[in-house]
Length: 91
Image 1 (cartoon, helix red, strand yellow):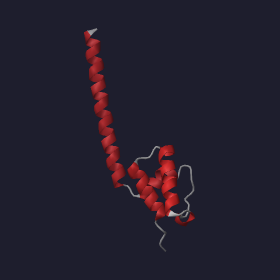
Image 2: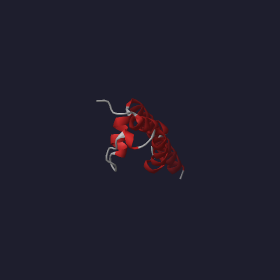
Image 3: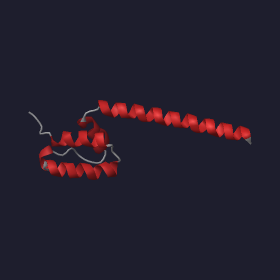
Image 4: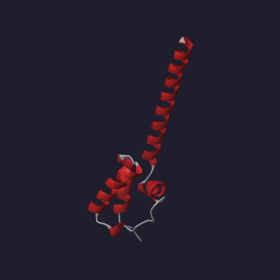
């Protein structure tokens, strides 16, 4: 019985370290990505690319808040995506 407790404890420790390491790598990757790339990876799965002028900046903020919850986005991802959508396209 004592061996099982040791194995379970070690397993939990190893699993926790792996999860923590994975979350740190993911955070670094998101920090390096721009809003357009994050939009493509997250929003583009369900939506066509809208023109930024379709909604006002306030509406984009509201949409971003709504979609953050639905798509389980981080605050940083949402901020970058909304900023990308609010930026007018340059020719």
